[in-house]
Length: 404
Image 1 (cartoon, rainbow, N blue to C red):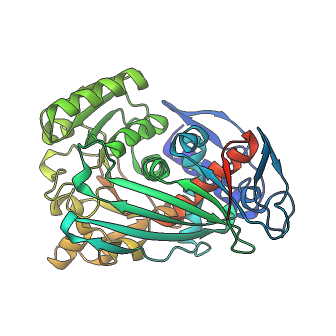
Image 2: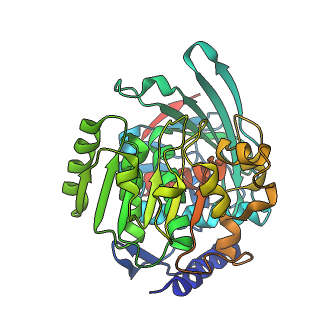
């Protein structure tokens, strides 16, 4: 299926989600579109937080393995707690791509609420703790994520990003669930990048450059193989040994050729698709290293991943103009710096991801056009992922209940 067919399919999904109707969206496989299944990504999520009866607050209270009561005892609040391993097992990556697409459409259409991220800084560790609340009406989910970013954790065995997500009943505001958010952060970020690739990358994109060797690098490689026919992955990072180790892991898991290379330039040479997931302070994506027609998904935060020349030449897409152009800790330095230098203006941001999903802004117009998705992360992505997890947890009877 070509890009036009994919776009039409995404828009049918979003229209069905917004109207509350079911649909049968395609599940994107390694070589494009595969089988279909009933829509569950967003329209079925309301029951997660509201239980079986509309308008009533229902906490999913486990009374026996695999069973839930309809509602807690009078006056008793019960929160469902899900660990990182449980979240990972429950979160379907194909459903997540569709759910994130629908959430981004909600955000661009003004239906969702996602205020700018706020943060408390820990300057002696170059880290911070941020709060990200969001409401996605099409998914029936009200949630807030607390996420810490400590770049110094890289290579220590402790993730650089760690998070928890609290979900509340959107009818009453009652807390109903506490989820590990570290897995959600990794998977929803990659899912949004996969949406960008589905909308902007050439349909025949087969060579993927992964810049970085951490959690986000791994999750992005997995996600991109679900939406484009990837046959070769090149991994580059600061440590050649870590690049080689991740490449070997991806080759075994994804069944594609994957190699660790010695430089970012080598990884980018001739690549059709680029995922930059680094803590770089100097650009790792440079215009002279890029092939015509490449699509770049840049999710690094705080520093510079993409040089000014690439930003200036590319068709630029973001999750939210307000978020991307806001000051730190919300906005993107990769956009701020060329704007402040006078190389581009804020109007150079061509589209929001949701506008591409809805079809209110055009995407790629030529095969040799360079496209750039610059991500800063928005709360509706976390909320959409949490809704999927909670629905699956209710269906399978997974999780522990803690009275408050």
